[in-house]
Image (cartoon, rainbow, N blue to C red):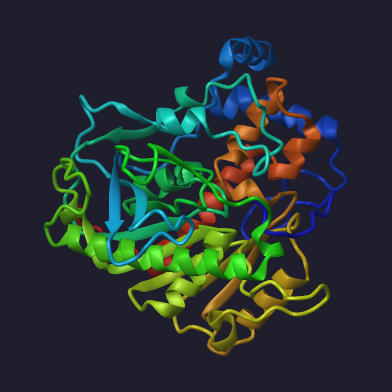
Length: 430
């Protein structure tokens, strides 16, 4: 779900360290051509627009871009239950449940199947017109997409930095899979977090007396329009993050934190180094990453992908209260990575406050000709939907911008990888 921001049309791609991309004044015809090329070359492996339309008629299977690192990837999911907290969104739920997916460098993937992008239940119920009206309501087989990670594969030896990911408000953790796989392929353990009641849909391993197997979002509008709701949403996410860190420490110590006690991949606990933790997040997840680092010293570096660092104002035209991280600053590295298509007074003011602190620990970068969800898997998915006739050029621009995914995907991945490689490097051994 968007958390505000205005979209500026026709910007050029001009950013430090990345070559120029789409020219100023990009037309929808240009966007259409880039979408077709992206489907044929970047993601689907060829076939062109005619073949893409054939796939759409039978239920299009979208594909995720492959990771580029030297390691094959294993994956597993964990159902984590915090019995010290009640669920903040549903008074009938006596505990706080969190679902996470762990991506990690694998020792061997032979005989271990590739994991689906989404579980079957989540895929059947993922389309919510409130959250993403640009997405097609039919014509896509969301359950058919596979990741590049292998379920249950044994972990490669060696303690590795752990990176947490918090998605945008209303978005599921699954839409951060491509970037998580990229980071894992370069040696990191990446843990993507769902925040149930906030995320559009979350499937659990089993039903419980207090909920069905798939839980849906309670969000009915942009949380930035409701200061109390936004405060509760971010507070819950920070508490979820700290709880996940606690359970990962237990995993690294040799215990199994999964609520069902499901078998863990061989060597997974020994692959985590809880002394080297970073975090990144998109939108509300970016707010969470920055503020969680301020509140929890276990997090050594963070990336905010277009998340506000202030609360919404209580009255139109007012100035919302800054989060402590922006008001007080932080002594660890923070990257603010945004787009030209998602800027307003709150983003500019709160990020400027963060950058004003002495010490040079915060840096701001921008991707142009891009929109808010370019930081998610939609960067690669939206052009495929457009090329198949399932999304208009205007809706593609609204969702991810006009930038070609052959440029946007490496740009986002590269910024994150270079930041964490600088501040939480993977050791050569292993």
